[in-house]
Amino acid sequence: MSDTVLRTEGLKKYFYTDRSLFRKKDSYVPAVDDVSIEIKEGETLGLVGESGSGKTTLAKLILGLLTPTAGKFEVDGTVGAVFQDPASSLNPRTVAYRSLERPLELHGATKAEAKDIIMETCEKVNLRPELLERFPHELSGGQQQRVSIARAIMLKPKLLVLDEPTSALDVSVQAQTLNELLDLQDRFGLAYLFITHNIAVVRYMSDRIAVMYGGKIMEIGDTEEICEEYKHPYTLSLLSSVPPLHPKDRNRKKFLLTGDIPSLDSGQKGCRFASRCRFAKECCFSDMPEMRDIGIELPEIQEAADTVSVKENEVSRGSGHQAACFFAGELEF
Image (cartoon, rainbow, N blue to C red):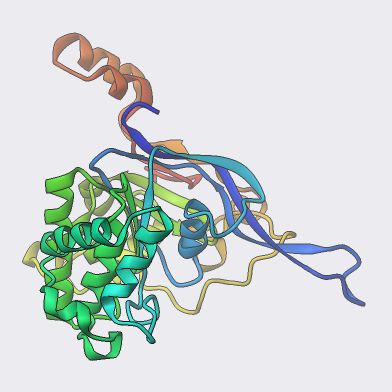
C-alpha cells in the first residue's frame, strides 16, 4: 500500500430485514453502499454528513466491529479509535489507569512495561499522572477524552478513527482537544479519519473532505476546494447550515434542508439525495449517478505537466475532486 494506510474499494454494509405478510422478499437497508476512499500517512480525511448518513457504520467496518456485505478494505498497521462519548467508552468500575493498562496486558506487556508506556503516553496527551487514580465520573469531559486518546495511541497505530470526538464536550474544551489532536499528528505522523456532522470542525481539521449521504459518498476532494468550489447540492446544504464568520461569506446563497434523511431500502432508485434536492430532474429519481472527476480534465493536467512541475500521481488521478451528481459543475448555486 506504499504510503497509503487505509484503502476501501466498493465497501458495502446492508442490514437485512425479515419477510412479512406484505413483503414477499427479504429487503435490506444499504447503510454503507459502494464506498471507496483512501487515506495517506499523516493525512486527515474528514467524513461529514447528517446523522443517519452511514458515517459510524463505515467506521465500524474499518475497525472490524462489523463484517462487510461486499467490497474490501486494506489497513496498513494498527488502527486506534476515539469515540463520541468518552465516559461511555471507559469502564465506570475501574480507575483510568486500569483502563489504559488492560489493553497493554492483552498485548503481552508486563506490569512494569505497561506503566512505562502509560506514563510516556500520558505526557504526550497532557494528562497529569495523578488523574489516572480517579474513576471516570471524577474526571471532566476533557480529561476523559484525553484518557481515551491516550488509550488509542498507546499501541502506536498508523491510523486513528475519530468518531465525533468533541461533540460531547464544551466549546472551549472542543478547541483545546482539536489542537491537541493536530499536535499529536504533527509529532507522530498519524493519519486520521475524522468523522463529524459539523463541516466547520472538519474544515479546520482536514486535508481532504468526503461528504456522505444515505450511505454513499456524494463529493470528495481537497478541503478548500470542497468548501469554496463545491459541486454537489448536499455539500452546499451543509455549508449553509454554518453561520458565516467572514464578511465575504455573508452573501453566499443558502440551501437549507428540511426533514430528515428518507428511509433507505433495497428497492429505492435514483440519487439518494433527489427527494430533498431543489435541482433534481427526472433522471435523478430513476438513475443513480456515479462518482466522477469534475475538476481539471486529464488532458489539461498533462499539458500543465509539460510546462510546470506536476507530480506524476496527480496526472494519473485527475484533480482528485469528485462528485456523484449528474449536473456537477453545471449548477449555478
